[in-house]
Amino acid sequence: MARINRELNPTRMTPEVRAKLRQSHLGKGKGISYEKTHGRHTHRIVMEQKLGRPLREEEIVHHIDGDHRNNDPDNLMVLTRSEHVNLHRAQGDLRRKSG
Image (cartoon, rainbow, N blue to C red; front, side, top):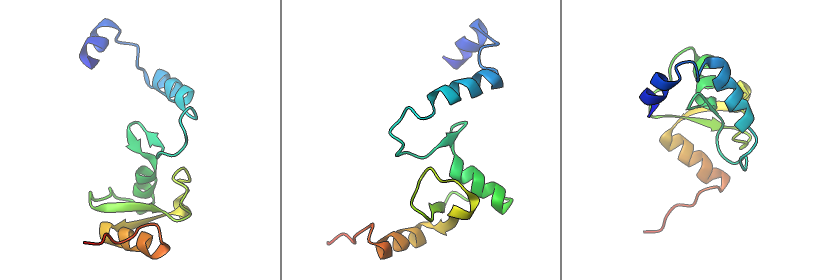
């Protein structure tokens, strides 16, 4: 479909149009999901810029204050998957499944 759109209307999705469409969609959801920038989670982009390197696939970006929309670099920290789970268990957000 993207190929057909490019052929039929090659000037449609310029960076300016993409930014305008993104802006028009912001704030229309319930505000409970992670913000995205060009299809990527913004908190991961912010953390990569802070670290000066790409995040590894196994690295999790944790929002310290619990607000998924607060992507301030000082509110983000990188954890391994197990560290992240243990942190949430300690905070009482997760309970160990009984087996």
